[in-house]
Image 1 (cartoon, rainbow, N blue to C red):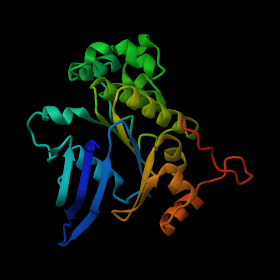
Image 2: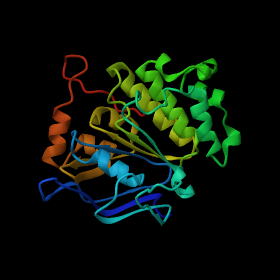
Image 3: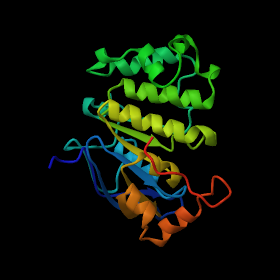
Image 4: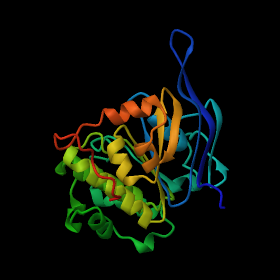
Length: 264
């Protein structure tokens, strides 16, 4: 069996408080992400999901434990250029209004990703826009000319352009209309796997995660409290916290029927 693409081993992230003491945002978390695998990380707001994602990208220092990507340690980024190996980790952030440069065309921003991709000959700006269901002619427009859902698709195209081996979605659907959430989540799964990448998809919405993830890790108060295949966690949750998350999912038709489980 090959080694995992990403290994998170006993990782903690703590912050010093102004008045003394500390706050533990991530508490001794261990989880692996295998190659060409979609892992959903779910939990309520404030449970530490996004902090863990930022640590994986080198944006937050860890207080304990280790993170390895392709066998190499991931360390906190400094002021120098991002190490080449970490360019293969890309994140799509929650807020599509803040993640794009408002003064540059969307095409030029996607082109930045292509220049960082050693295998970029297989992609073009126009082709990537079409992959995220936008016409190629919009590449000369600026971010303010797009809706939130369109901006998030552009952010996905930019991330894929750089040739990631690990794509992280940090609550990428939280700010979108409910009608778009499953569609954008499914698009991320499709493009990541087609590009040969793994996907770590972070969300508080277990119903959406269920239909795109191969496995699910449930996080509560900085700890992983349950981990299994999507079907196992959905059909037979072992932890009371997971059971409460499932119970909080609203019925979509008013008859108590939960969303279907087919992969998008």
